[in-house]
Image (cartoon, rainbow, N blue to C red; front, top):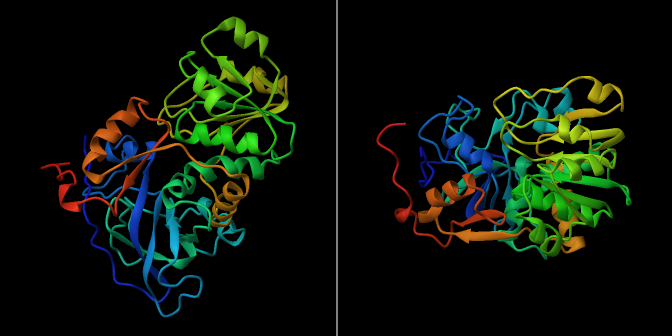
Length: 346
């Protein structure tokens, strides 16, 4: 695996910058895509990690929102143009000039570096305060997985109690989808390729139903039953079996990063006025909202905490779906010198 985990060489603190001493950082499936160059856009050396929680240890002279000692979070993006239509609408994650938390270049020409490091320097606009009542290690996955499911439910008007939703794929994002949707009062069906996760979906996460996509009889019986499906699957898969599950005006919301074309026949949409759409993480405002939502509803993510020296093994296990449901790296509690060594060549 091409993976580097080192102490970041951060830029100098700017007027509106916040210096964050990293405490915890979640591991997302996107980290695998980036580390292995699945999207043909990776740059090495690389310091991944975009579900970052830490303590403010320094602020620039023009910072007004944070002070030293605050516990804060940093998510997937750390910059945007601030002038385009998405930026002015406070959905900066759709800015065409957004700057990723890592594997990108900041405005000063330096590479951005993620949360698998001892510290980050981030513009205050892209920092969120972790509310009281939410443990920092629990907050980390919410900065990507949590807001990724919250944002489309809000945007598409799917927060009304009584809706019937499907969660396709029960991983880091999917398990939060079950929890968030249930807390909104939805009837939630977990859709999986086998029955292996039935008990954990229904007994542990509280799903109302479990549907095996490989069982034609079960799929046929569930046709036209769902208002929406949150599709978290990050690998190539057919769409038509899931379109058949949607009611009139139902929505199939894609979230998995897939580098191959997906296909379907148009009558699957036309004859039910159904939609295939996508959603990408969430805005800074929505991130703040989902953090408070989880506090108000008493929601937590289910995590496995690991040290920096275990990161490569964690990524390998994540690729095998061998985690329930999110790895979180205890960065502050790790010896950075024990982290995996950079490879000789990328």
